[in-house]
Length: 473
Image (cartoon, rainbow, N blue to C red):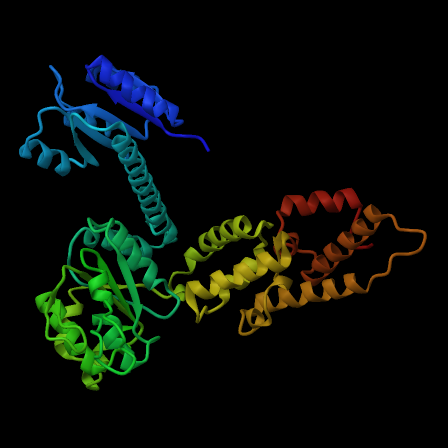
């Protein structure tokens, strides 16, 4: 396995060479220099996993050198060595993120063990940074797709509220993307490096929900064989996302209200108060104002949650976003499923636009995934859509669909002669027949006929001339 590259910085040539030789024998790639200036120079062309540096130099001290190196290599692990240790310098080194502070003289085997631990620590930091970058990318605005006025307003609202600690209440029908908005808020806030802990209040039985939220102590109830942290404690420093909060039992609503008011709670069966610093984002598809009137939801909790309301529009109310969403999901599932769907025909897109989408964006995403898997390649046509898309459609689309289905039926019933067929001639005859039907239906009004055929009038006239078609034919 390839070993990491380490930079050794010390003006004591004997010690520097000893460290370099010791680590080289163990398979590491070593660059050794005598000054901070040389260290900064070599770091421009090399990436290091670890720097081992003396504390005291005539110019820049070792801790400041590490800070400078981390400007270009933020996950660089570090060990500081010194012959003049002080409590103040040790505290400063720890505060500035130095992995270990080693006092001279030291045993090289001891240093070897520290190097392994420091490198492992650096790998964990780098992996955490990578995961955070992926999460920010995954839940960034680019994954909340839309160009409609409704979505532009949503983006503006997220940007304004994200980097605050205010409680947010997200409302909208099922499938509109409430959790995606909650994640976008969290990962664009100053809490992005802390946990986002989701909990679906409707998915957990009421008798277990209190323990899930607040934890419990051993013996609190039958089956509580050990202490357990709750979601609020897990989310300390970060954000808790309470989805479907409208389904939360009244008794538990009172405890959630206390957390919002005082940022503290007691685990089930405990008298110990736990303080937390947790932001709350809640979501529901329930009309909470009606639930308050029906005494199914606490009024005081509703007003505490509804500090910043965000309403996500239903897909049927932002149909201008459907083509963009379809393109987004086609790209996503083509990549994930290794398929090659090239696009959607105009006729199929008209059907998608005329549908009411009761399941909202989630229903559209599921449909595109199914089509990508089953069709595999080519362009999506009306025959690739389920039967429900042909119900309650506008008359002109229904007539168009019937024509397509009739042609499709005739095509499937066509048998290729044993001696073959002149395909070009067959297609030409079919084209002539369809154009003649359009002309006869419109009394040879070329404007109306071209509209029926969805082509330019000029194109129709040129085809008629080329084919030699006339009213007498």
